[in-house]
Image (cartoon, rainbow, N blue to C red; front, top):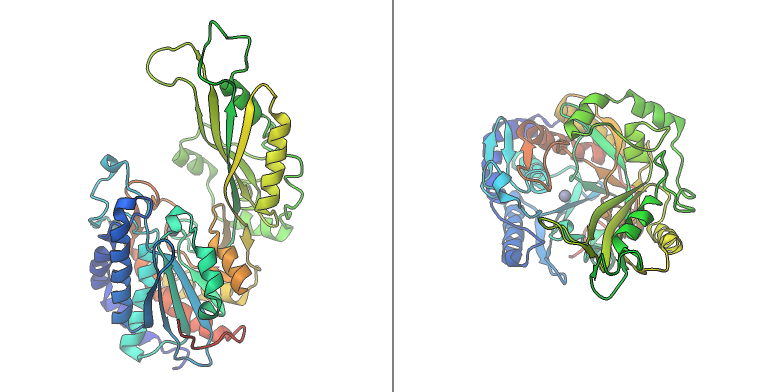
Length: 472
Ligand SMILES: [Zn+2]
């Protein structure tokens, strides 16, 4: 195949545009909600549907690999012996749909309105998986082969924390060997501004439980003689940040890699309207660490957040009570080179220090994930940038993300693989919220970009001696 011979593939994609949408609707009709046990059969049905689609477009070794939870769907195409191998990761499970009454159309009856397809999973992540299937289908139909080797690994537990994924990757190292991981599970910077994300924040999530008495107490009979856990909790949480937005946990910033002048200069060039951003959120004013811009605060600096509080009487009317217990869920977003375990310990020590002995304290570590950042000039990242430019007619910007995709560091650590985040969603796609949607123009351009991605990655060449043809 010549390096310019993609016209037939792109023509096929262009002619298939309406068919792609109809097929995507069938994928989106399966309520594969991993958080709810009653949908277990739907997850399997979804995995089977994907397997059927993979076989139909011409992938090989299509297998549902069992895990202690939902199966991983594996498939490959390894007939390009001298070309690199892409390991494609995605997930077929979706978030729950409540509150259902806020959906304009039913979450599992995909509906097109104003050029967007509305359904749970449209952007996160079924639409973005399907985009790659359609690019592969076009290659197979027009050229009978792909310019690269490809392996698919699609899991069904991403929305519930991917608890079996690390072990799966560890125990299938040989089968998953590749040159680069491609993940399409993130939004682009803004509508009309395609982007390649090269960094993610990590995460530590903890729960604080305080107990001041055996049961709730009468605030008249006991008020003044015992500590109130709700009030103590507020005091403890108030000590986590100072007035300039800096986290006060000792040692919290020790491992934070400072932003470079070069990176700060790049981010200053990105289009951003602070007033519009503020109004979209509906915040009276923005807040954050002094001395940093919004992008720097969200992408390049760590945070401490209170995710939930529970204490005392919250019903209608008044009840004079001193609550026996108070609880907070808190999380910290981490940046390179902070380590989740280290930060969790720093946090726990500090909470113990600032909590008075008048209450019993329990700290529970819920989950964590490492931050990740690719080298700015990584050849695969640049190849993805060229593919996006072909598909969207516009060079992408390079940005980081404030969120976390823990699997990216798993691939780095267990398989030694760099990841390319090739996402075509939009920031207002409502993933995890009612009225999730995917822009169909972006989807279509994404299928074309995906086709170019395989060619561009073929051009980078092989990074390692990743075996070409394992048996799964
Ligand atoms: Zn996702």
